[in-house]
Image (cartoon, rainbow over all chains, first blue to last red; front, side, top):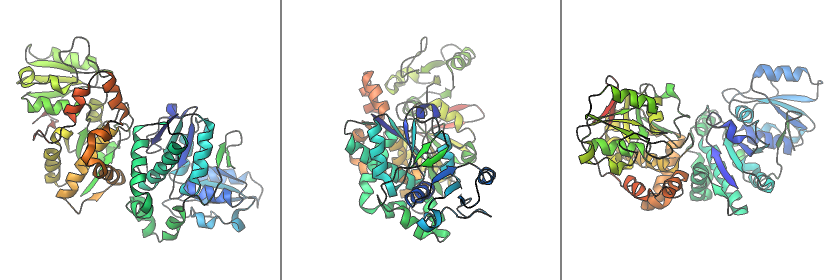
Length: 240
Length: 240
């Protein structure tokens, strides 16, 4: 088993992803939010690239069955029901609903990974469950960090390091690519104080500037959910 | 001063590089070889993308004034004078000569960084001298790792971490981008045993398989040269 990481959606090699198990990571906040929504009983998440695509998709759904969610520049999109804060995706808000979602980085990474044999949604919140599912599939695994505006993002990198570490524990003979090795080292050196490590991320600073510390604290919780969101390509929906 | 790193040539944002000081890193072996050639008295290095371009450039130079160097798949190119082993670029071989050079990753990274205000060639061999020159210029600094076939490469990453650490020592107030921060952490955690760290690089293994351990040991020597190769854009030559 070969395990490697792509540092950004833009830097990912789609040919390499074809036929592999691919884990999408956008810790702050898209994959944390998708995980939370489905853990809290949302029926499915429809990930789309643009605001127009989200509105068009919603227009085809029966009223009352869906919510529009996502962000641009980390803020709620005008006319949408929810922003990209996972703390808004409570059971009361989302149970039974389809979430039509567009975000700046996460949805781009999901689109990039469509050639994958299996596409899973990973975050600190559900890392161990996702690692176990990926490992049980037995194929090569790529972790695709969404990054922030196509730059390497420390929050995604730390989560990738934790996932690689879980995978290496499950499969000690796995071969790690250079970035997988590097991020596992990063994780092992800082696992006792991940919030401090991630406080150096430039995206972290942007969210703090917007008063979103509570979102960050929420997203850095480890393994509080045991759900594994995956993309059902036939329906084009992320489901459990 | 802002300092950041791009993990591969393909992943570099040329717009972001425009007007900046850019350090090109291809430890195993292009930038180590260019540094060695110029330290040993080569007149200049002409970096070109293709084998044909190298032969065409050589055809325009007076016989006896140049050498053809480089590699494909880490091996010497048929009809060329030298391969990509820095240990071939001795004073006896290269003094006074122009080296026309093409390599798989390094020359691609140099091409990508042409929008830079100043393009410097960095390696472990001359890291401190390059960091000092970059710092003295006072502008934002990008480190561009060549990578290996457009993948993140641990050898380049470790060298980038060492350069970031030097730069941060020279400019404690510098703001580090997420990858600059990550690779500095990697370097600080492993600085006592860099050869062991870099032995995990997949490119390292390929060179070992080709019997090139001596090249690797050579390239991992730190600060043995105090030269700073830079690209003279008017002449399109890398010089001191």
